[in-house]
Image (cartoon, rainbow, N blue to C red; front, side, top):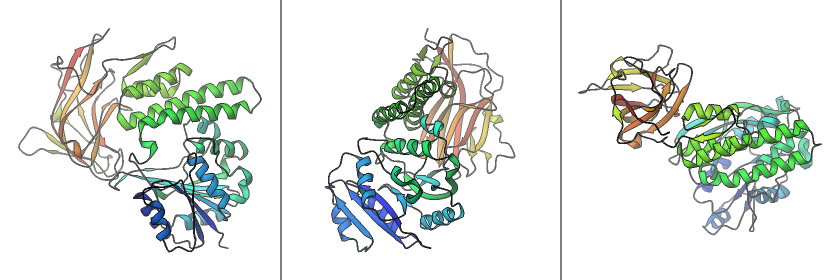
Amino acid sequence: MHPLVSVILPVKNGLPHVQAAIDAIRRQTYARYELVVQDGGSTDGTLDYLSSLQMPNLLISSESDSGIGQAYSRALARASGDLIWFAAADELIEDDAIESAIVWLGRHPDAISVHGSIRMINAAGEEEQIVHVQEFDLASHLKCEVVPGFAGLFDRRKIGNDLYYDESLRTCPDYDFWARLGERFEPRRFFTIRQVFQSSRMDRVSMSFRSEAFDQFCRDKVFILNRFLDARPSGPDVDVLRRSATAGIYAWAAESVLALEGISPGFIRWCEKSAAVDPWSTRLQRLSARTSSFTIDETGQFEAIRVQSSYPARAASHIVNQLALDQVYSLPHWEGAAVEYAEGSDGRVVCTGPQAWAYAAVIPWESHPDLESDLRYWACLDVEVVSGRVGIAAFTGDDLLDERTVPVSDGRKTVAVRIADTRIEGIMIRNGGLPMESRIVVHAARLECEPGVT
């Protein structure tokens, strides 16, 4: 049996990425598909490109729309397939993805969908990381703890009338889509596998990688959440879920902005909004410990630490308790990690393994510093990444705090990591999230302090 698959592709001014996206679809090993393109009124030559394609299974429609929700909805109305694949102009479907997904659906006849992992690539097309789709859970989805992926197939026959996008939503129609499906179907019917089904771009072509977009994202998600919960019978359980999910949406924005631009004013703003709803959230506690950029006291009062920055002030002083660069070490089970002497200097070269975020080396203390409450402390490393990308963080033995990522493009620079916890054993250097070996030269390491702000 070879069911018809409708690949749904909305696009507006999608050049040049849409060409690569369609090339990937045309390479599919599964032949019985139709490509349903919904153009939003492109003016950049996208329509001319689409019209030039010699594809008998290509269906094109072009008209202005209100956003991504309406574009997907219109394409779905035109689709003929019993199985649906949601595509995007900045994504590349793996050559055998549709065929593999059909095989998995055949093995799990009760499943309404099957989804695989996503390879994240940068603007140069280089792999940054693999994102494995987590098992679906409605409450976790509403709190933005689990963000379902769309790399896979939906069974239109089983889902029926719920297979639609809300055309009124400017952004995040998928948040509404998954909430509706999660209300109706048990988690076991959302089948996930670790096989990579597609590559997605991590550049500013995608709204998800623009920090300014999270204002609209959060407005739409909070609206969807309240509409969804308002349709349920009122009660304490709904009130608790509304509060925790609203705080979770803002925490998701904070986590996303932190990954995009570090400890920025935008990051602090989203943390504060989350704390205003649920100040005792474990996600906020982790963000506070990880960044040392804000505190929440026992009454739930949020306070940003104003001096948190990427480097201490010029008045900072070097203190006696040195980081022991000459005692830097790797552990045998850190696969691929190594420490070498830097030629012609007292520095060290740290080599990471090829696994994303794998530990590589620790620079310990010569003697552990006593942290005075009225001072702020920084571990300052003079570094140069030779290849790949590395992460540098304070290391407590079971946690990493205030991690900074340094790519090869930064050249030689000073990286400062806040030391705000007496448990810190030293400074961890690890793979910075790339699936490749990375190398960094650490020319010098020192501890600095500056007066705190009262």
